[in-house]
Length: 100
Image (cartoon, rainbow, N blue to C red; front, side, top):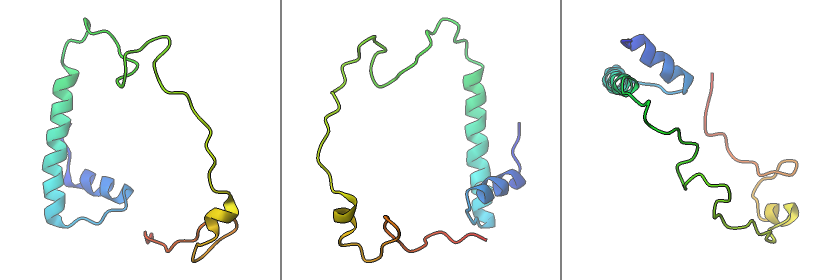
């Protein structure tokens, strides 16, 4: 499946990104290359490869992970105590993304 500049603009819009014409062309090339690589991977014979459920440690019945330990943390009043602005039980921060 070949991508078009329209596809790149659509994805950029979904991500709320403003791209220049040069960036659209650049990302079109990159995304097209990625999709071609994914197509090549899809064509590989993986029938002899055992499915994986986990990549951080071998899938075992009892993986060796540390036990969760409860620790004392700040309460809401303490956490918000030095906040320059507070909402109802939360920090108020300036808006960083403007959406139309």
